[in-house]
Length: 276
Image (cartoon, rainbow, N blue to C red; front, side, top):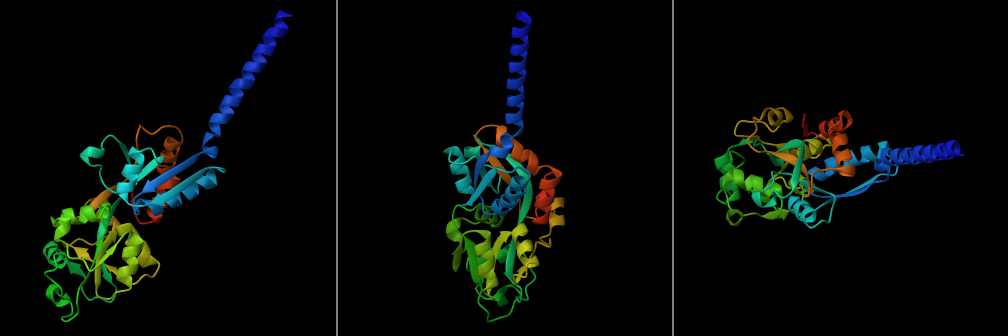
């Protein structure tokens, strides 16, 4: 009888251990995560999520934009599982943990038909301060007005661009204010006199899709993946996933997937520089 009792106990124990192992191995198949924030990171995260969901049937990762400031605020307030932030964390935000998934640059863009191919920092300052209102003032066609496209407050692209120009927000004289990269691309593509700035990755992707824009050489450096990778381009930034606590569980699994060969391939396909 004692032998029979021990066998039953052992069988039950094996069953419980096996069930726990099965549940753990399939935890990622049942996960539900929400990522919010940067409009630059969002398309990358959305494609990574799609690939992850294909490999883990039943998993669901929702991606919502709103700017890096939203990604930080949502994470601090516990409203998302992953915040998307396309810049370094500020000192006041370093209660969060940042995981860099890629690197990007900020490209100055014009319509494809604009004859200007390059600008320097001083010319850009004059354009965005409203001191150069004619393309003839910066080497373009005289008599053609410059239409200045600027980013809305709360966008990391705006912060980094103005930091590069050493301008305060109230010093900029925009004609049009836009939100995400796609709005910027559509605005400049639809205005032959326009000038704006967006993610290099987003701009290169749009160019490949036939959107009529041009990426300008800046300070002698072309806005290319090679120059971002080598650190030769003047405005670069990390693309981060941020969390309130060190990544664990499902979030840790997703980050591991992002850094896998499959994740790196997705990042490269969208014209961003993966983290090795």
